[in-house]
Amino acid sequence: MNIVILAAGQGKRMHSQLPKVLHPIGGKALASHVIDTARSLSPERLILVYGHGGTIVRSTLAADDICWAEQAQQLGTGHAVAQALPQLSSAAQTLVLYGDVPLISAATLGRLLQAAGQGVAVLTVDLADPTGYGRIVRDAAGNVLRIVEQKDADAAEKAIREINTGIMVLPTDRLAGWLSALKNDNAQGEYYLTDLVALAVDAGISVKTAQPAAEWEVLGVNSKLQLAELERRHQRNQAERLMVDGVRLVDPARIDIRGQLTHGRDVAIDVGCVFEGRVELGDAVEVGPYCVLKNVKVGPGTRIAAFCHFEDATIGPDGVLGPYARLRPGAELGPEVHIGNFVEVKKSRIGAQSKANHLAYIGDAEIGQRVNIGAGTITCNYDGVNKHKTIIEDDAFIGSDTQLVAPVTVGRGATLGAGTTLTKNAPPDTLTVSRAKQMSLTGWQRPIKEKK
Ligand code: UD1
Ligand code: CA
Image (tube, rainbow, N blue to C red; front, side, top):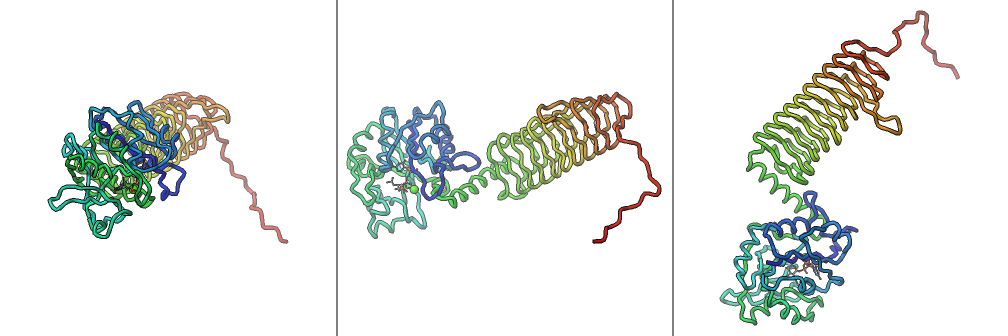
């Protein structure tokens, strides 16, 4: 089959520079949702009709399997499909989708294709309020006769509640003839794709219909309000899938997945979490409330407390993280590592059972096993021009408020006294302290406030 995705419209009501079909749902462009669903049906040709915001639409959605058809002027949906005509394989059926109707399911499209056979089929739905949509006009026996647009409909037609979703299947070998027969003598002065239905009936082809499994599948996005509504629907769908697969969500209405979340067994996710890119949660991982995880792999048994922010990081099994921990790109934590509140880790490897529980910056570091990093420790990795590495070997103890001026190495089993500013390597199994000796000055007086 051929699939034609209509995406030339501007989307005026979005009030945005960004072409409508590039606005995101679940972190992915509206049109990309449709493209992915189209791909799952393995079409022979996949053609995108674009117009408004042409260059950015093409560059954002570019892929080897997509053919492009430009519709320079938006003269109607029939005109739009006509632009794709030269690229269609005439032996196959043509399925028309909308780039701004993102949640249509492959299962529904499968049923529509089946209903069509080698003929015509329209995806329709009964709406309590059909205002604005094209209506499906049937004869007394229930056969579809034609589609009438809202603006062209008389009172009786406006009362029809069965509407055209816009999604339809057409026999490609008939398209050229039908499309060239379209006229724009209607209320909107447009070439309506919907007029093909009457042409098919005239040609003795009966027009079939199919219905989506749920109404939200055929909802389009015309405004930011509708964008937000479909975002919540999409998130609800993902949440339901996770729960069916055994993930415990404290509140399925309070999760956002903008990418791919994979998981093991007995995973629990508290409210308000955002998952972006590829996130992998191992068995029995617990994610506390209000965490943001982007491109993160979390080993089994790890517990993440509230308000953590992790990006491009790997966390070993049985870790204890947060609250308020931050892992930046290149953070690699071994098994049973503890990273506590207000600790930032960037481009650093931390070995098994090492702990940094409070207020620290660990950047460009190589940290061994069972290392204890005291509160307020900072790797001074940047000299203003270049980044340098800090190496802390196994079993070292870093006292509180230590600055490690990189490049520097702390030997195995070494202890650094609190407040040390380490500028030279610390030998193994030795106490290194850099602070001045403590003294008490007798007779010293506090300054007194000067009189004005
Ligand atoms: C269309 C249908 C209507 C249906 C409704 C469902 C026609 C004539 N009417 O109406 O029966 O109930 O969709 O939402 O088909 N587009 C182009 N080029 C154009 C015009 C439109 O690419 O020249 C694209 C738009 O970007 C959009 C889709 O086609 O993705 C539908 O266009 P829109 O203007 O929203 O159609 P409606 O008038 O709402
Ligand atoms: Ca519309």
